[in-house]
Image (cartoon, rainbow, N blue to C red):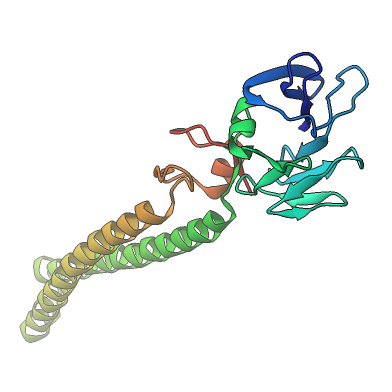
Length: 238
C-alpha cells in the first residue's frame, strides 16, 4: 500500500492518495510549510509505504525544500516506522496522527503467529505419546483376557494335566488378571487427567495474538492457511 501525504490544494486540509485513490481528511488543517499534494502528478510532502504481507511500514520525504521528522529526528532517506512512531511534517513540525491515518485508509496491522507453530508441535507430540501409552495399556488388557481364557480352558477341557497344576494355572491367571485390571484402571484415569491438563494448558497458549480467542484444536498449518482469526478477523502472518 502506498500513501502519498500532503496539503490539499483547495482547502488546506490533509490530502491522501491511497493506491491511486484520492481522499481528504478535514479533521486536519495543514500549515503552509507542508507541501501540497498533487494527485495527477503523483507528488506530495511524503510517502508512507506499507508492505501488504508483513505489515512493515516506511516513510520517505518527497520534497527536499520541506522536512519530515520521525520521533523528533529529521529524515533524509527512506526510514522504517511503526504505528507508534511520531511523524511530523514541515518547519512547524506539524504532528500527523499515524494511527488515525492508518485507520482512515482502512489498514489493519497483521499479527504474527509464528510462535504458535512451536506450541502446536509440542501439543501434537505430547498427545501422540499419551495415545501410544494408552494403546500399550490396551494391549496389556487384551493379554489379560487371553490368559484368563487359557486358564478357563485348562479347567474345563479334560486332559491329563494334574489338578495341582490346573489350580496353579487358575491362581496365576486370576493374579495376572487382577493385576492388569487394577493397573489398567489406573492407566485410564492417568490418561484422562493428563489429556485434560494438556488440553487446558493448550487452550491458554494457542490463541489469537490480538484478541486472545482460542484457535481450537486445529493444526498450525490450517490456521496459517486460513490467514485470519475467526473471532476478530485480524490478519495473520507467519
